Image 1 (cartoon, helix red, strand yellow):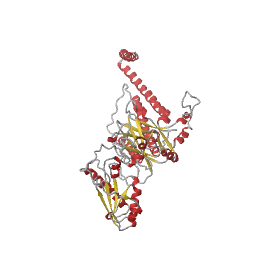
Image 2: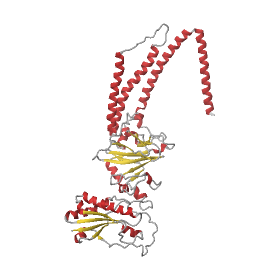
Image 3: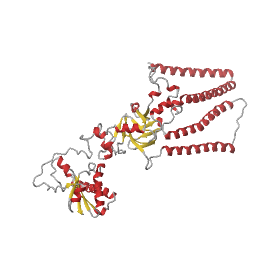
Length: 507
């Protein structure tokens, strides 16, 4: 019903306008065309002046009224270091373009009034004026040049990436309909790798590769907590449609694009509490936050930084709001230490755990017969510095604490302790030469197992070499599943056969 009334009103207005036009034509014929045209020109000229004055007052007045809430003035100054440069560039641009905006509108409507059509007035044609051409070409060119140079300077500073050796914290924000997944690095300070092919809804929402040891201590957070005064690098990506990572108080805004990771670097300069105290100085921030609770908390007391999605990514777009808390470095360290790695909480020990710590559930194994059994190798001794000193040339010792990411030759961080013992032994016994042997179980393709064992042995060799031991004193060998210690009939036996050995060639 409301729609029909609205349509009828529009139609009625149209009819009234047409009738007014017809009446005006009749009066014009009565008064005479010339007198009528003169009155019309004068009326439209004055109407134009009234419009431009009202329009400029409205533009300036509304900008002044909303400057604290929408334009970054008053209490809402930038809370990041680079934001000061952006605000400065905004003010400089507004100053010059504002002058042009006001003058051109005044000139347009003043000329329309002053040079309106009048009886006896003739047009003046100016063919060319070099002075005028120079003025209206040179002045805009100089101003534009200054704005472009200033813009490039601000852009290069605001969009500069982390430099080598800088102290920073890197987090990751992944947008999807309709939420943000915020991932933090753990104690190692590094985010692990991801692969969209590994995404398992409810089990591995981000597609983290659990074979990468850097992933094992990463954690996810329901809110963004950052230390004040520290450089923050945000990896920004999306899983479905285009989103936008927007931190308005920090002047941070960057699209989150599926398949095309972006980033933003910024340094928070005001904690949440400091920003609240800044707001407290303004009268409009000292009114009740909720009008229904006049004695409740004030607006400044309830203030929170926030992350929003600035793209219309769907009907649930509004729900992507996330709280952002800027705290002291000590408060951040305490908060981060209390977080539980996503792997420990949701993956470890589960059937979808593909890390080095848990092997996948083995397929049913057929007991070997006399014709298929592989003769077991001699059991090596336990590796230790004392065992190496006592062992003769030809002795084989097992490295129990040298481990790798599952199905990979990447050494885990825990391996360094035992490998450092080897380095010290080789530095102490300068005539000793050794062989590093890699072994696997019989799961999978034999050729791939042999290649994997070779790569793992070479990884150990490369680590020892990086610590100052000549490569000529080592020999890396991979045997795949050719030399099992025990039959590959149970998961426990297969674990024993996946090993790295240290063989003394000469002493």
